[in-house]
Image (cartoon, rainbow over all chains, first blue to last red; front, side):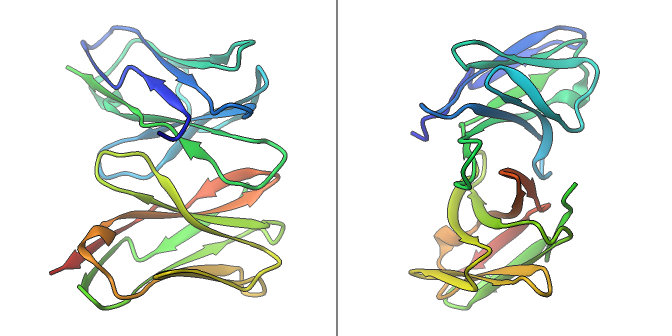
Length: 113
Length: 110
């Protein structure tokens, strides 16, 4: 167990629908990062939150949004889902002010049918 | 932002041989370089890291080298075993933010 908790582990939904992925960071970590990993692809950075505020944005579609709550858990909202959104979505957390790398959660596997 | 290039994209080695993965980075301000291993369907896990004030670091069969002048760093796996088969990602950090390479799929042939 990495200490980063992601739910649900698997999600199957239809095109056009909306889903919410949840992430609880490791205790003491203030930064949360979301990544998308499609089949046989690398880690595509979506967005970062630090202590409740958006800190950096990557290749995140307008149909996607995220937020980080006062208890530091984060949610990634994906709407108007398309087949191409099927992927593994990873959340990672880190201590912002020290270089100890990121700790990844186990991911949510999203399948859009 | 930082740009990290990783080579090769795939690597097949005979069990017992060595594997080497190379990464280059663009921003000389990068100061921390972790390596992650991702087994199929699982999360990326940190396996070794190196900081910019160190040239080499070793942990059992894995080692990482850093050449700050040339802005490249490498992962070396010796005496490869079947359980080393995975995707490996390098990363470089500026201001505590990681930029990842595209990954190398390593296959160890028995």
